[in-house]
Length: 94
Ligand SMILES: [Cu+2]
Image (cartoon, rainbow, N blue to C red; front, side, top):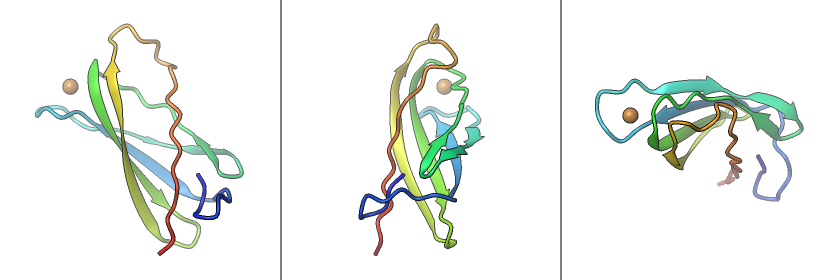
């Protein structure tokens, strides 16, 4: 995660919520662990094949909250649990 001047943002708290577009499914949630300055990692179990929208909820070290959404398309039923999707999040200062 970087800020508007491309500096890594350390010390943020990150929660993720995965949803599918159809009704009747509970969202999947996860938290991310900081791996080093500005790098975060999480494992999310996507419990069904198909398209997912993942909402990333960030709490920055200064207390500001930011959210960002990205999509993971066409998750396959046979996909290994540990497949990883790199996501890069930029925090915009106002
Ligand atoms: Cu589903």
